[in-house]
Image (tube, rainbow, N blue to C red):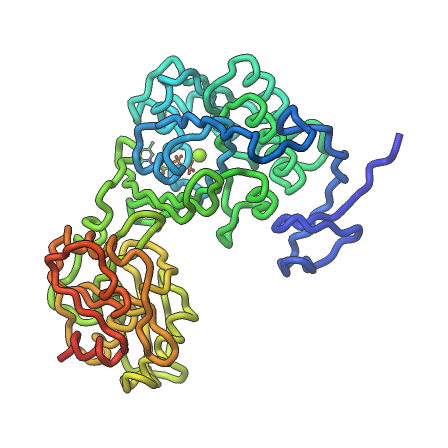
Length: 450
Ligand code: TYD
Ligand code: MG
């Protein structure tokens, strides 16, 4: 028999080396190489029975009948319900509510058949306590406390559930691999086995994944390639709001978000996030402005805040929360050069209220407006919203979905919108709010602070 070969595998990216190294040459992580046994060669699994090529035209599309959980925010993030046979990874910090969310979601699909909830972390009694809190008592939810993957798949074959939950992938191990549970080798092997199981049987499989200290799922690249959908469950410590965000979705749009609130009776969905995010807006304060951002397919109104104050000591501090740091620095330079607002030697803090992360360039105008308002010490009219991308020469560029953004603003009774001129000229809908198209940063500043 061939002796097992020892390899060293990076726990962050899956890089393999024959000898130990202090730093992974692939992803640059320090101290991430761990001794593992070489995985046995993959068995001859196939996703479908056909292995001869077929003309594209002759293949009929899957008539997917998505299972709806009834939790609208959850269904929407998945792209309109759970696709049979899909493998979905849900990542998030410990204690954020992953187990709660999935138990509630499973309870929502029991009218399609049995569901299997496998926990490697909690005892059945602990899960029972949670389900009592959530008022979930169905006979169709089958619980199993198990960590051996082969046993789990065996059970699942017998009861053929509509969906199953693996809580969490880091506690599972496959007998075929000698490495410890939670190592890249194990995580990958288990995910692969579950993928084959899901595709063969049509059972949808949810995998809960823990997030490491730097915010990525352990063995992230390895897992994200295997699964169909990657969803993150995020929230700020101390806040009760939780955001479900699709990062990758083979069956729907990525970047889609769902908003929840953690209450005493589990997670409650929030259908009107704009209302929540704007609920605590300060009146007449400087350095705050509202923008309409598109998250996936949905417009959300958000408040941007900035604080600009003279640096008291040495190099000025620049901090950004919820927006890209480099983007903020770029916008500071544009403001300084093109709008003549003095920002050198100022401490600048930019924050998106509500703990959301906004990475689309359409937020540029809001960031700039908030900073200018704080620097000039003039408040922005509270009934005005702004959006638009800003170029390096101070030009305001068109953004996508201007109509959607304006409609949302109109719904929340905003009276004025300052938007890119190119967008203003191409609007399709009829709007009752005043729309001001601007081409240049200075033009926008004039309307905002005259
Ligand atoms: P949990 O789903 O166990 O988190 P995860 O699986 O992501 O680690 O939820 C943990 C937290 O949620 C816990 O601190 C208690 C809180 N919680 C509520 O506030 N209300 C509830 O109804 C439930 C079930 C949990
Ligand atoms: Mg849990």
